Image: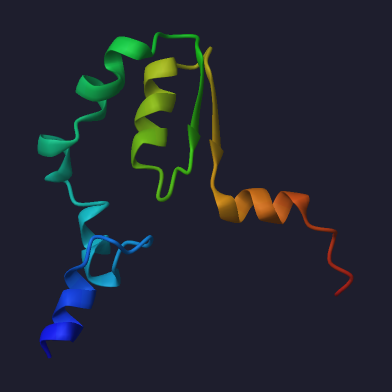
Length: 92
């Protein structure tokens, strides 16, 4: 049991554990990771911004709002990039 808990709680894992996923969209997250505070000094209206490895897009949405309607946002995750580079499906 100790080994099991150690494996679950280990921070050496590359993927976030399933039981921690609820924190990504939690409204309380803005207290710790406020996108405006973190990214505000670096993003101005009209800029082109890109969030590489965007995951669920927590910062992507905030970056797009900061760039405004004249800005441009691009989001890329390994999943979308691999789909874009794969040959078209022959299934109909």
